[in-house]
Length: 222
Image (cartoon, rainbow, N blue to C red; front, side, top):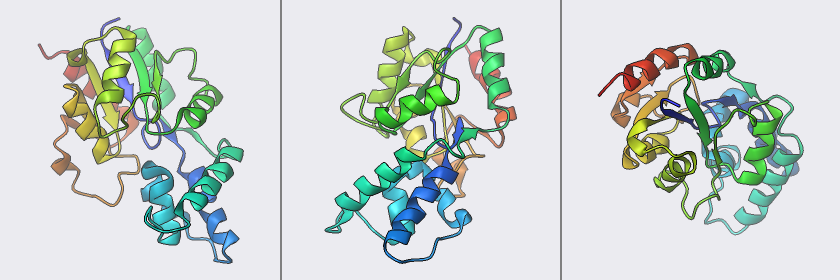
């Protein structure tokens, strides 16, 4: 294999926001509140339960009932997490291109393994994915570099031969700390931060179709 391309999952490989937003609105419904528009919740999808409970209920981990609400959110999400989730348009073609050009690829996500692994299988990625690292695979989650370094070690690649693509600032922080190339998936959720240049990634891709040229340019560097 030439090099290793690592992807974040939510907002980078897969458009999971519709199912995550639905789980957030279920928490509102449990409290007799009307649903929020999908557009209001989408930017928080990469932040998982914490971000969506903040956006949906104004709730933070300091609140007394946060843990119980988080558990309920995750139960609701797990029970219906494959209804609307799909790969972003252009991602299947990108993965096929990586395979043709002899690149390995894997996933590093902050999603817990019990959620991430079934979704990876549901989307038909499990057989070709070289490694899947979840938020609980290592002792630390992103923005710590440990998950990325674990992925490199498991696949036999040195960090300088890896590139990490993600739609959250912590993805870029983790990738840079791991000594990997970094790319912002600007078509993803990206929170409410529009100053993506300030993340100081090696490149920004506005669409999945822009990723392959970026990967090629990175791979050609000495």
